[in-house]
Structure formats: C-alpha cells, structure tokens
Length: 135
Image (tube, rainbow, N blue to C red; front, top):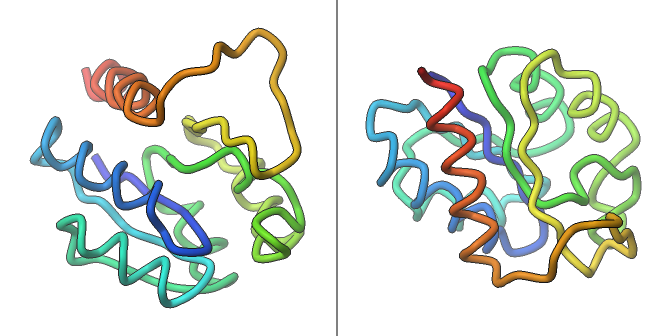
C-alpha cells in the first residue's frame, strides 16, 4: 500500500501521521509531500525515505497512491496561509482514492458533527481507517 501524507507550514501533523502509519503498517510505502521544504523535511524525520515538495509533487503523487492523509486544509484552496494552491486542492479532492482528513481549527472551516478531540485521537482514527483499507 502506498500512502501519501501531505502537510504544509512546519509539517508537524504530517510527521505524526508518518510515524503512526509506519508503526501500525510497517509494510506501507509512505510518501511525504509538503507544500514547502520545511514541511517535507519534518515529515521525513518521521521515518519515511520518500519525500517531495511543491504543487507538482502534490498533483503527481495524488494520482499514484492508494490513500491520502493530512489536515483538513489540504482540500481548501488558499488554506495554510495561502500554501494550498487551487491546483493542489483540486488534485486532492479529485483523487480517486480514499482521503483521510484531520480537522484543524486553523483553516477557518468547521465540520458539523465532528467532536473536539486531541490530535493524537484523530491520528488513531486515521490509522484505524487505513488498516481497514489494506484488508
């Protein structure tokens, strides 16, 4: 299973996802895709050796993976202080694979019915969904 983890800014959420995925699904091939070099480098510190940065990396990898994970803002053009381009958001939302999102308050979007939880709890939910996907 090839899983793309996408993040921007400092890549902290992405790094948590990379670490958790590799711990739970060690056979997974995790591709860290950042909107900037700092985010990509931080995600790669989570244990993956595959990383790419920028708009084209997002567009390309979105079409070549089995699942996509990241904070909710990756679906929203101009989120993360403008780091998410409309083309990036379009590639993620048009991907023909499951997309697992972690709700974050910083992107000014609230999803009705989503309970306020700790980041670690959301990461556990994503891992559970990925484990079901691989079966």
